[in-house]
Picture 1 (spheres, one colour):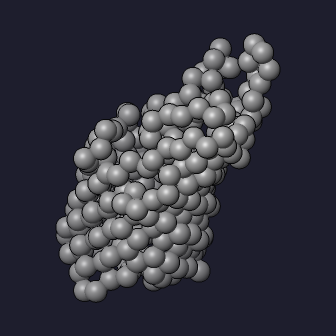
Picture 2: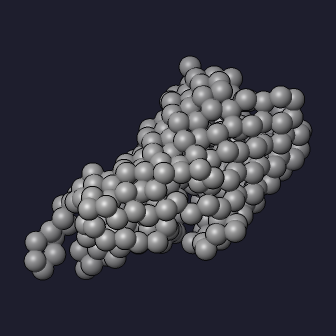
Picture 3: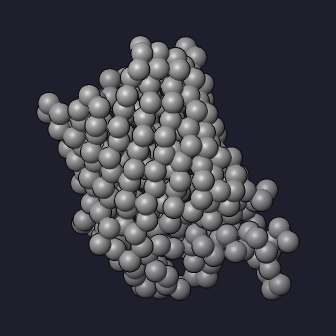
Length: 281
């Protein structure tokens, strides 16, 4: 039963046979898995909020408001086989994120296979008054059981006021097609993300954030996400919807550390826990 679930899971995320094509949602699904326990706990709709290290992945225009250096990581493991992890470094105006999904060795009736795909994001952004602009460059590659590689460029905008934030990002505006061994190519599908966030501060120690995001606009795979979080000092709780199901999360901050936990009932990695750790200098 576990083997069947793993094979079904991998079929959603990637192509399991070399030299075969698939639609965009399969080819580039690695970037749809997200980074950071905090955004994932709110449904992944972090485009308009983008107020911490995760801005480097979700909206590079938010990097213009980052004031500290941060290192963040995330780990998720499903079915004792599939491992998904991310690692990011964020500075004012600049951020780098790496992602990897590894299936482990999956056996089938004939033989077996091992799938590994990786992604990299280099992002930069700055702000002028209430307006932030940024761009992220995404590199996608497959290492096993075949090879493939391609990249795409995404420009972004973020408008910030004391209460309302609005974000825009054009996915894959300029790209190099993903090229598989054997010469088959898959184009990145262009789409738009639009998000809005509202922040309220009833008191100095209390903060509420509500977010909504529509993604894949003008593409073949549109979706919506939303969420809410409440902070009291260094503690936070959140709930959301990521287009697949409900999400939940908690945060604990102490000294320079932040630990984020998220639980998501998602199709791509199934229901499971995500843990991320952030250290700020």
